[in-house]
Image (tube, rainbow, N blue to C red; front, side):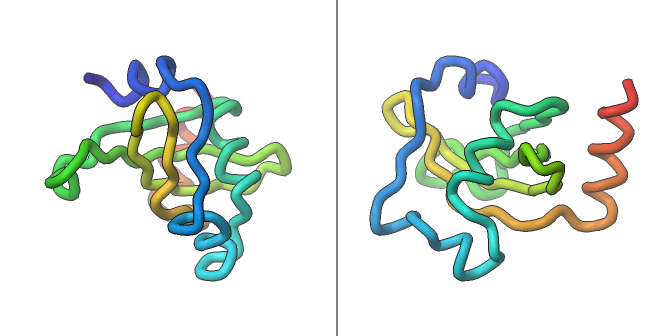
Length: 103
């Protein structure tokens, strides 16, 4: 399944003690900011084949409501998006996201 199709079928997010506030501590990215990325354009997502050993994983480029550009790694479990990791985009990721924003 394509990453974009997988996200469109989702009904919400999964936050539990395993991933709640993990990105806030590690990368200063709140759970709310992670969720915002999935609703703002441009949102670019693709399969992360290299890390999809036990379950399909995806990575995404997107921005928060405040315009912060984030790189997010996530999986989907039972129609819920589970964020694995979130951080600020690096220079190349920002360049690619800005290019897509201009299209």
